[in-house]
Length: 115
Image (cartoon, rainbow, N blue to C red; front, top):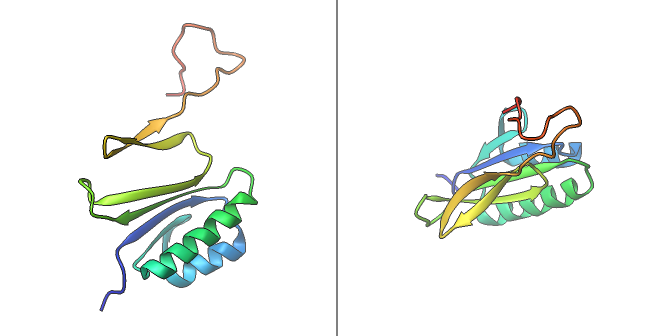
């Protein structure tokens, strides 16, 4: 019997203790990518713990994708700072990339060769 809805977590710079808690409930399929079906209560407790842990880490980030009764069939929560942000566009979740600051060697008006 399955307990909860499918949850996928994508993380970076997770403190060791929080990572250990996540691996008790989720399978880490790739470094920083966790998949599982915890109950809603456990999912919410782990998310709060992850948010608290990442608040202490410079550059930490997490995105949680879970099944939901939406047009797309899922909802996304994020914490931390990352150049990719989630934007709700009239009920449709879209990914918006934050523009980078021009580097010192970039000439104004020319395309950034890193894209």
